[in-house]
Image 1: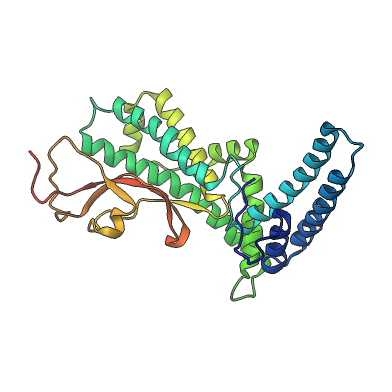
Image 2: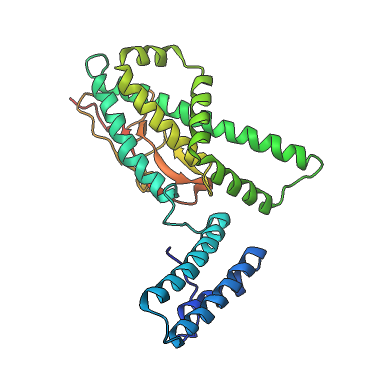
Length: 303
């Protein structure tokens, strides 16, 4: 378990005492009271173990490990619930989801693109794959928004605003339940089956080796589900098409190299022609985790 400490002046405090000061000052809630109690018990336990000369080393380790496990469990729950701290031991943490998207999912995407080389030009297959990915992510994002609207309307139908704490509770519960294997497999299948594909995407699906496309779609959809149900949620950014490739976009997207000539009179030179691979970002433009790739319209047609 990795903890983020708030700087304090008491440099001679023990680690447990520093955590205790941080908890007492900044996290006044029921769970934090439990954590504070557990930290105090840990301090007493450590002192007792050090003073007890009759215990063997293995017995001491067992006692300390058990108290450490309880502390980790409480701290992990508080971190997950806050949405502002990340539990690095969680296999579905935002950092690990972003890494999975930019490695495993991207490798499968490359495999599918290679299968389409004989059927489509480079630009055409990039357009279609981008359209397919955006359609899938949007379907999962819409599912969560509709669920939120129904839930909050049933509870706060007469309220103008919903307390932020309620959103945090809902996100915490959803992230906890949504990551369960049975839940995410059921949701992935349900949402994929509900998507109304356009004719060009239907043709694309028919032109691809189905086993590879199915593997990619399943993996991509599962990561989309975990992203939209994460706490805080993640988004895939496709919304830079047509924008000028300035510093703001350059911070989140690198240029995707194209080997064929690019010509599109609808897009001005130096502007984004298409999003080949989306960036992984936090909601409300609060930061990004991995960069995406975009095709930028050159100043003159490439030959």
